[in-house]
Image (cartoon, rainbow, N blue to C red; front, top):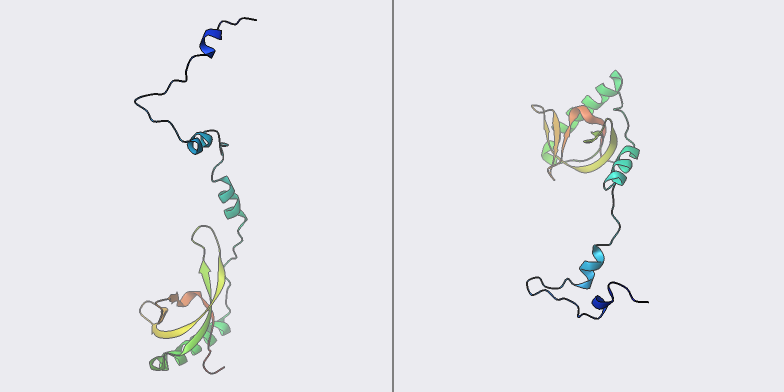
Length: 137
């Protein structure tokens, strides 16, 4: 059977003088699957990530926390090691998480109402849920 393109079958393969031949790895990449919903998996994971609302403290809990902060402020020259449980608001969505941190207290900053640690960490006083000195435990 004779086809209309039979005369083209025996011609040599054309090689461009202006454009170098593409490596086989790059040619294969042209045919890789297309991800039409790129980033969709990240959105699903972010939505599924759980956060919790800010816990509320009663008046007696707040007074106890203030008493402990004042006691620590008096010992600030000794750089006491403390364990703090505090609420960390989420940057991306409503809510946050309770975080525990242990470190050496550098200063109780009343002007900014925060704790400053020797490693540079700053914790706002309004986010502190519990604080205790670990040196004496």
